[in-house]
Each structure stands twice: as C-alpha cells, then as structure tokens.
Amino acid sequence: MTALRPTLAAALAALLVAAGSATLPTPAAAQTAKPAPAQAANCPALLKHTFPRLQDEKDQSLCQYAGKVLLVVNTASFCGYTGQYEGLEALHARYKDKGLVVLGFPSNDFNQEGGDNKAIAEFCANTFDVKFPMFAKSSVKGAQASPFYRELAAKTGQAPRWNFHKYLIGRDGQVIDQYVSNVAPDDRKLVAAIEKQLAVR
Image 1 (cartoon, one colour):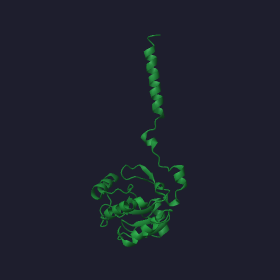
Image 2 (cartoon, helix red, strand yellow):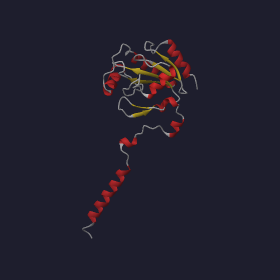
Image 3 (cartoon, helix red, strand yellow):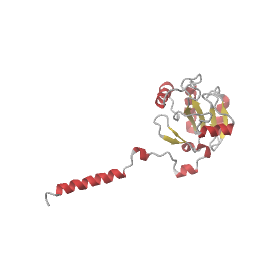
Image 4 (cartoon, one colour):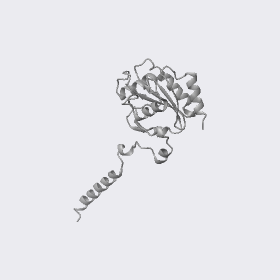
C-alpha cells in the first residue's frame, strides 16, 4: 500500500489539473462578437452589425456605440484626402467626451488602399496618431458592400463616390446626413450638425 501512494497522488493531481484546465476558457472562447442581451435590446437596427477591429481583427459589435453620435468614414492610405485623418482625429478628440465617435472603415474600392490590415493600422498610428475606432478593410459600395454600408446608402440615397465620404448618425441610430469627400472634418456645416446632435439627450 505504501508503494502505491505516490502513484495515486500523482494520478489525483493529474485529474485535478485536467479538470481545472477544462473549466478555464481559452482566449477565443472568452471573446464574443455578440452584444450582451441588455446592449442588444437597446441597439438601433442600423447598428446591429459586427466588424473585425483593424488592429487585431477581433469582432466588434457596432451596438457598443448605441446612444453616441457617429461619424462614419470610408478611408484610404493613398488618397488626396488622406490628410483628413488628422482632422478626423482632432474632431474625435475634441468631442469624444460629449458623445461623438468617429468610425473609420478602410476600403480599396477606389484602388487607394492596397495594404493589409496590419499595414493600414501601422500607417494610421504612425503617420496620424489615429485613436478613433478603425475596422478591418471592407467594401463600401456596389454589390460587394458590407450590409452596414448598403443600409447607409439606402437611407441617404448615396453610396460613397470616393474615399472619405462621411455619414452622420444621431444618438437614436438614425442617419442625419451624408457629406462628400471634399467636406473637411472642420467644415463649419459639418461641425454645426455634429454639435446639434450632441445636444440631443
């Protein structure tokens, strides 16, 4: 019996380790693309979409931005309007505490975003110190457009005609207006429209 005790102890220890590891979630299992029930219940229909985050391609529900004023922009790294990243980041920083979130959607629909997600993320961070939420490269126009962008086009009657097209969404999840690419982030009419929506409670 004495000779069996180390073997039994080792077996019990192995069983305990196995049982403990079985109950621990893996990193993949710990993450979920689905919004929490309470979040989903309060999520406007327009925001019930999920996109991979640019930096790590982990799924993010747009429902997390319910109740915020959103400025949705399709971006590109090699466009004449790429400098608008700076203004968009300034706009986001200026109004984020009041409820504004700028959402960036890189796209190669106009052949000016050829890099992969890692290259885009590095460019945005290193060149313009972008901190507003950015999502993985996707399509924003035509038959290949994401469902979110198809809804934006349907509600405004205008799909993006070029990079840095902007859609303003109110706190209630309704599209307020759309702005063509040459409307800069500091344009007085755009800023006034944002401030008007931020004042809505």
